[in-house]
Amino acid sequence: MNTQKPSFAAPRVVRPDEAGARADRFITHLFPYLGYGSVQKLLRLGKIKVDGKKLRAADTLLAGQTLTFFFAQKERDEARLPASRRKTPPDGALVERLSSAVLFEDDALLVVNKPQGLATQAGVNTRISLDRLADARAGGAYTPRLTHRLDQDTSGVIMLAKTREMAAYLTRAFKERRVEKTYLALVVGEMKEKKGQWDWDMGKDTGPRQEKMSVDAPAAVPAVTRFEVLEKRHGLTLLRLTPLTGRKHQIRVHCAHAGYPIVGDGKYGGAKAHPFDVRTPLCLHAWSISFTDNEGRARTFHAPVPEVLLQLLTDNGFTPLHKEHP
Image 1 (tube, rainbow, N blue to C red):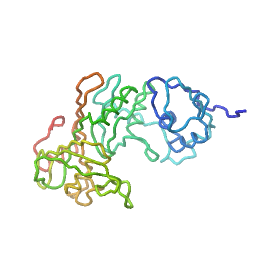
Image 2: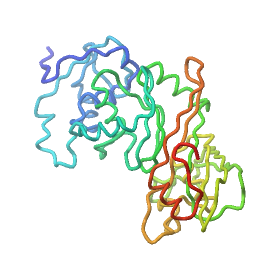
Image 3: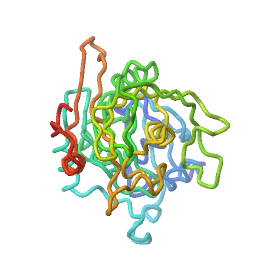
Image 4: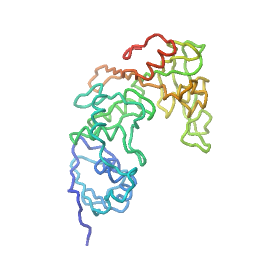
């Protein structure tokens, strides 16, 4: 006989717009205060059911399925956790700031100018992230789905799907390289080439810091980046870059390997990436994104250049850069 009893959460029916979500990510969104690790444990213990059967972390949810929860109130008690680990809902002011960063929105798509320093996706040690803020902003009306990523220290345009259909379409479009992304980067050194292409395979570094990527990695995969010099002055170069592949840290690794690290990128450029008396933030901005949507319409979205980069260019004698159209 099953002696488990449902606890504080009522059974939850998966809505059509939520179908296709991976189970562990969906549950983490439902109960953000539990944290990713706790959700994984509850799933392993069989304390979350789908239509009466054990729900597994990698399961894909279907519309109409019923989720039932069998864990006690004490298992969600945040009072026992240190403040740094409490998964409280995002602050309303932060959600409002996200709303002010929206570049475009319709029934299927949300386009945001992600500020520098905001993580794209929530994690074990990440309390505030773009996906959590977008989810809080949606208020349950829909489930925002990330379709691509930006580094935490990179600002700029990023798209979230509001429907399962748009998420599937964009995911396929990125995989098939039918989405063009353009970045702006201020790098150290005055480049001699006017334009060109870097074709250097990349992979995860096998050294002690395996979170880094490297062109010398044994399991490297193809990575291609086109570059064009917009202007160069006082030992600096402003580049327009188009990655033809979507590898982690691709632009940062390619710039550093070429001998022109991005200003502020100490991770890959070391001390050379900090040429000024004060340390500067990463000068990499996802400026635009272009694609043909699922109705055949050509779409292009631009993210205004952040003030910190505009000011740095002005201070170093570059031609005034228009925020929307460099």
